[in-house]
Image 1 (cartoon, helix red, strand yellow):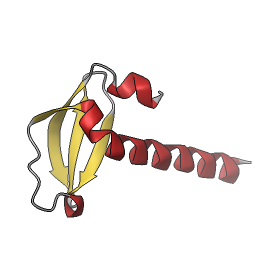
Image 2: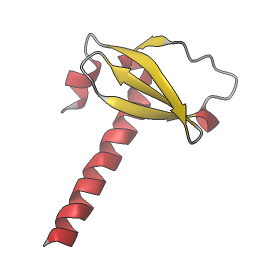
Image 3: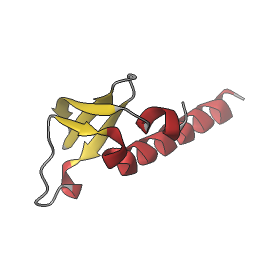
Image 4: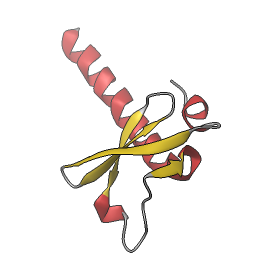
Length: 76
């Protein structure tokens, strides 16, 4: 999934909290963490425009791709 597909005209909904991260899910099903260390004094609402959380979406996409690459290297 590309970043544009994840954020364009999508909302992100709070799903759960785990391991010092708020987990959100976009309308199209992409789930990603938002570390609470980044929150500072910010307010995280139950629902946000996905584009406002693009920083975290991009970071999670990078982590997913790196994990796939590492898995492929270990399988080879």
